[in-house]
Length: 260
Image (cartoon, rainbow, N blue to C red; front, side, top):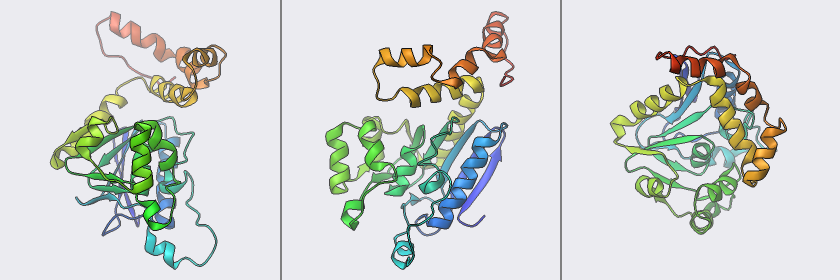
């Protein structure tokens, strides 16, 4: 598939952005990513996705500015899930891990911010340089970055294009792991396998609860759960897996999840 590669490894889907030289994303590639993540969302045999970039220099340089400059029609159709297939896929209840192998700029960082976990290779850099190009990081950057970093630091990155390296990103809590470049995919796969080995309905419930309660007081979050405001939570609690987990623990064996 032009622009991206997909590989299924058991319950894990690996999606690789592959557009030399900078893995920049045009509208066609965005739509392909949207199709990949839609299929991931709808496939009951898949539990976790990993998104990464081809090569060692770029995770993604974001929007393909050359394609933008050549555009003569109306607004681009990014396809399902918004830019990069992920930044507006709000109904995705399965976890996605960003394995950031290189420079993540603009839309590249916005795709990573739309993921649940970020693993970064040593030496990679992150930035949202849109204002220096007369643009706004409106594929989630201006919305998500202030939620992930202290506001003053997020505003500095948004208003100046300031870069942040992997070490600082880890220190600030923006990324989960920083590893040697040769260990990046192994680390991302290890995280994915740990998630995939957990009860699938419980994993989805956790993600759904976090999404539904972000920005509201804890008391209101409890009220939302008690009133059935997060269906994934109720489904998990009433599932066979919710009985299987404690039983397997008591019997000293590994649980056999049914996803029901």
